[in-house]
Image (cartoon, rainbow, N blue to C red; front, side):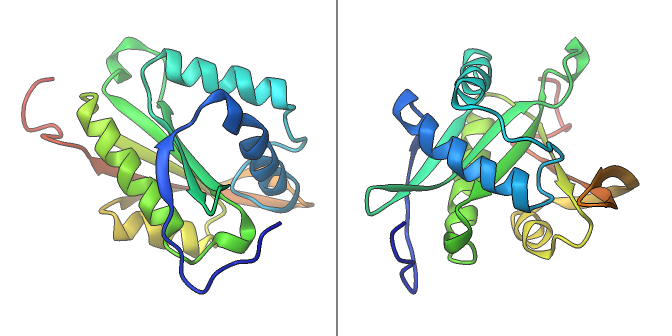
Length: 180
C-alpha cells in the first residue's frame, strides 16, 4: 500500500473493468471492519464485476478516484427503488481506502457523482448511511447539500450490536420544481 500524502487531489474517472479488483479490496475492508455496509461477508471480485455491470447498464454513474496510479476510492449511484415511479431518484454509495479518508477524496468523488446524476436527468438522490455515529459520512453529505430526513433505529445487526441507518436526501437539478 502506498503512503498517504498530507493532502490529496484525485483524478476522477469512470470505473472500468480494470478497476474492479481495487474496488473489491476497498469494499471488503468496509464489509469486514465498518458499518457503512450491512453485508457480513465481502463479495467476490466476480460479484463486484456483476454489480458494477448492472449499475452501468442502467445508465447510472460509477466513478473511481485515482492518486499516484492507485485507486483510492469509488462512488456510484444506483436505483433507489426498482418500481417505475422511483426512476428519477437514485441512491449513492461512496467508499475510500481507509488511509485516504479525511483528505477530500470523498468530496471530490461525491461532487463528480452529483454532477453525473444531474446530467443523466435524475432529480433526487438519497444516502442510506449505516450507523448514526458515522460523523464523517453524515458530515460529507451535509456539506454537499444533503439534509437528514430520518433515522431507522436498530435495523441492522452487525459486530454484535444493533445499528441504525441514517437517511439523507438532496434535490438534483430542478428537483421537484418541474415535471421530469
